Length: 313
Length: 164
Image (cartoon, rainbow over all chains, first blue to last red; front, top):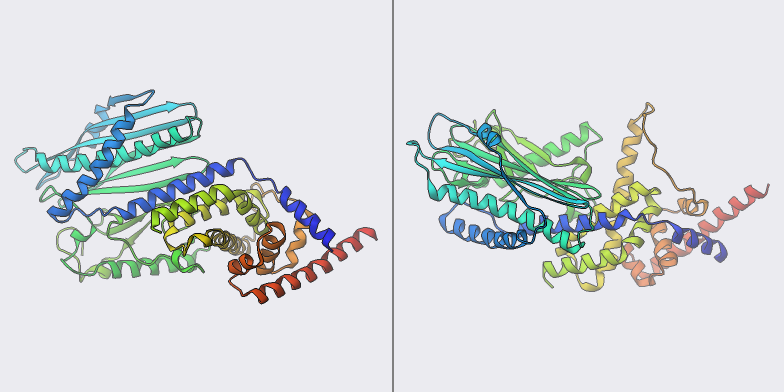
């Protein structure tokens, strides 16, 4: 019997481990690190105090990115005026947010490349005057975000001695621009052996020109997290029951992997019918094959806590 | 130990042992593409949830458990998909490895298989195997004993078939 066991062991040890595995494990590790890093940094822009603190911490990171960028082999900065022009939006009332220019940070070396679009915005008040502080706040945040992505890429280039296989893409779109909100969404795709996608959305309150987060859409102190989270869980459950190909981290045997509730800085946007849509990154609440997922929250779920003016009731 | 430190520990262990984690996953899912998916998904979960790791000494057993759970999740998911697919789909089949002997492990339950692989192929200590399975030492011993008995029957049957 031992002889047979030896034989199985032999075959077991002969299972060939694919060469690509190491890279995929590394890409998972770095993606997980990016994601948990994001969760650790608070990103509220609500109060004036937290606003400064946060911008500072983003900015500090941005500096690292700038320093790394100086070491680039190929660097191409271009102004893509037609695109920027096309992105301009002219609403009726309140402040106007324009994407005035769009720079492209492009670097390619062997099998590694990065392509990051960096929009620059201008916020104007009703009289067409530029709101310097608000514009800077938004642009700095965007820059810090893009710098972080570029820095992560540069670190990977350095770590692999330029011999890695990786493509980082970042583009953006204006997902909402109505009387009350302007939202700019970034799509990031990191392709190694597999690809990981993540989203980031920034919002400007068109009445004040300031950046807002999810909690600003709701009455002060109101619990919006619970009704939204419960509704998402219900939607996950219904979707999985109706469609076997769908899967969410809801009933895993391992409790800590399950989706519990949304975080305060979860990504969101307001769709054309004025409904709140919660956006999750790839891997965040579902296995990788599901990609990034989003949930539209029915108005009646949050109608008792919502603040007037942003969402359709 | 704080979270970033735990993360670092998990990362180190992943890079040191991804090949044996791959083999472990392989004994469950039986093909290269799925086993790679399992290891990749497990690596993500492990680093992301490194904070819930109890202590340094558990990192190995913890990773094994994640890989086993992820493998089982994938298998369950596939099973659900299979039962739905009545029509033959066009497409490439996953390439399954034809190791007769590894197929022999099929007679074992999920738990028994993990026990045999870890104890005899990965040469883990009995206590470690018990930790991974979340069983006590004597139960683990009897699981192993039972598994060997099952395997022996299976292997003898196999030999008999070939001879006749």
